[in-house]
Amino acid sequence: MILVFGGTTEGRKAAEVLEESGSPFFYSTKTGEQELSLHHGQRIDGALDAAAMKAFCMENDIRLIVDAAHPFASMLHQTIAQVAQQLDLSVVRFERIYPPRQEDIVWIDDYAELPSILPPHSSLLATTGVQSISKLKPLEVNKGIKVYYRILERESSIASALKQGATKEQLCYYTNPKDIPVKAEAILLKESGTTGGFAEKVEAAKAQGMRIIALKRPAMPAMFITVNGPYGLRRTVEKLLPEFFPLHSGLTTGTCATAATVAAIIQLREEAQPTQLPLPTEVPVELPNGETIMVPIGYGDGYAYCKKEAGDDPDVTNGIEVRAYAKTNPEVLPSGEVGGRPFLHVGAWEIVAGEGIGHFTVPGFDYPPGEPAINKGPREMLRRNLAHPLLRGGNPFELHGLTEISPLPSGGAGGRLLLSIPNGAEIARKTFNPRLGIEGGISIIGVSGIVKPFSEEAFIGSIRKCMVVAKASGTCRVVINSGGKSERFVKALYPTLPQQAFVEYGNYIGETLKIASELNIPRITLGVMLGKAVKLAAGHLDTHSKKATMDLQFIAQMLKEANISIDLNGITLARELWERIPANQLKDFTQTVIGHCRKHCAPLLPKGELTILLIDDNGQIFGNS
Image 1 (cartoon, rainbow, N blue to C red):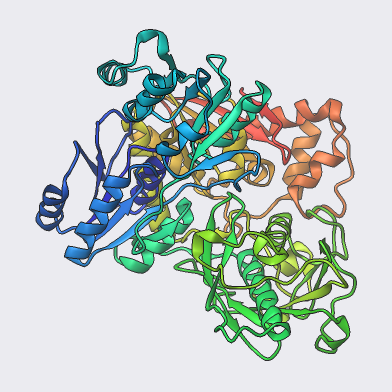
Image 2 (image 1 turned 60 degrees about the vertical axis):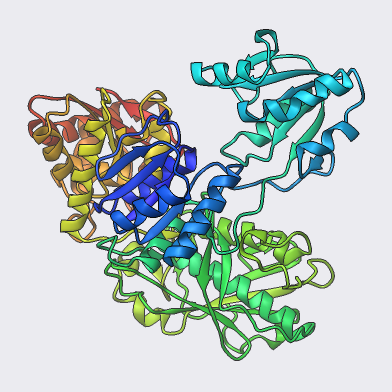
């Protein structure tokens, strides 16, 4: 059993991750005021001292603790560490993502430093929470400073503020992090990270010309295993408590290529500037969502590698080595492997694709024919990670303690990075790449950087669980979509719906609609992108490429119905239609596609209201018919 300490945005995210498992867990908050819908999790509310926490863990067979509480809840963090040590439990700290500390902000370690910083009879807006009022009252008494307290507008917070001596005139309330409710000469912030709106508060204060003072986040107990996002949490739970998730996640080839590249540069640094420190066996990789995960790597003769992990997702690329060679002198790279001109420049580094990496031979992909088959997501991952301070001479990955690794300077002559995949061409023949127009090797892909496990029975089971949770949340509508990209676009149309109202169907549109009908969900919005939409319109309620392919004859039929005449020769991907169909005829085409989709979907939801939205690659939405 897992015990989560939440009450924060991170706590909510942790609960969402653990709900995916279908396994029971406990979710603890101090006040019970956080709104949260749980299906498999059991909520407990009220503060726990060390004795109560230890007793609860022993009575409920707690085997892992997830600390997702506020970063400034120091007493709770220490209590968790104390109990975990006594019971020999691991603790995963779900940390926030923090922007770099700006030099034009005054950083302090403790409230006691404020009297020496603030001049007498000045004014201060404190956004450090209701519990800090008693610590700030001496500024008023001893230095005549006018302090305003920005707190949450709820009865318990207001009562606590008044009890600590604040007046109603001194209180102002949270609405938006960018709002500055009162004019003051200085503002006091907590280093609350991205989810705490720290950057927005700083920006708003600067716009008002306020002096900014920030209280540094306290250090966490050394025993905590730190993650800073949902994927890192899931992978850590899979490692520490393997049975909790019935299926385990994996890594995309894009993440593997990035990890190998980071490791290759560290290896090159060690060759050029020996430190006698052992090379790391895992390196940090920043994923597209901003979180950082640790990825296992290894080293060969002049190169670093990362082995592809498919997790429990059936994948012929499982176990392949993605290699990276980093050289300041490109002439010493392995002969015969250099894949032509660089496809990416980052600072003084140029990256080329070599053996075993395919190339595009037809239009319709992120890049034109002739380019290496490395999609936009992995290229951006490479760019962001190579530009990270660890590899260019600044602040290293503090989160993961790699502070002892000296980076290579990014200036000077620079160098070349070569990516390669041994036996990639042979492996690619077992994939759909040849049919898609990718030749010579496998493709480097991945939108999120993480592969969620796929099995038909388990995936449909997880959809059912998510639909049950969605209904339990009390939402008036459930929005089903194919994945993160389409969900991001559709979410903008429904800003008031809770997170639980958005459910991924993957490829199982038909099964998802059947589940919605069984659960008597009254309103369903189906968000679908064109590749799946043309399959759905043809009657394929499971759009997986193993079961359904794009039917050009049926597309031609739909174009004829919409009175559109275009040449379909050479089309290999449905999204190419967005460019070929004249803009003034897109509405007619999309309505025709949606009409065919509705014909197959509506009978599966006989008592519900169905809205179908067709989404293009740029997020433009058609439909609502």
